[in-house]
Length: 314
Image (cartoon, rainbow, N blue to C red; front, side, top):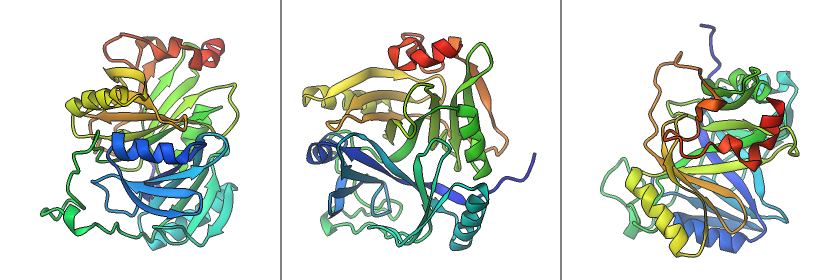
């Protein structure tokens, strides 16, 4: 097994673009149970109750929805500098920025399809009001028991024009390729990768027609299946759109549901995914006809309109 780079420690935050930012903030606060931690200009910063950093979600007003950028925390300040040198040698670097609310200077770069990402080391911890502080040192704050009460940001999923190319890109940066999905001709159309023991912190799905740099969905984790079911109730009962009823993934094994927040972004709420500690665990490969999205074989999402280009490629 070749030596793996280990520049990145975790997915730290994701910036969502929304044409209805205040309505989006309301959704994440009241339906998902997140806290607002700051505002600058056209952006609102939010975090879940189980997160120590200043924020994991940045909502920025924009004409269209999507992903603004993805933020990764380095393993150390030295690893940040090593990562920058490696990224520059790859030829995809954009350059340094002074930082943002909640974190210090960051180096920005582009994925092969143009998704903007950044890596940084210095972070600001969340300031927890006295009435929300938990008695347990391992918790940054009490569970607010509001809405879904998501505990943390889990992963981001992107549309890409070439899954294998992007998988290799992230593997170069030290990600483990845990699972993948292929069509009959052998083309990889799905990929799950992580830098930690999570099932995945970034997932990639093929779309051979979409413009580059598109978001598929953003996912937040809850504690158990019951909370996923309750989330579906909160979403529907408060007039929001539930895109997919609760079910279980085969790939990644999580129990999950999907909603569309007011800005038009797809949001996944899930729990129960296993942890993978072995550095040589994957990749475990699935055939698209095995319906890796749905463990109970109810609906094969790969037969839906959003995956038209995959069927044409097959």
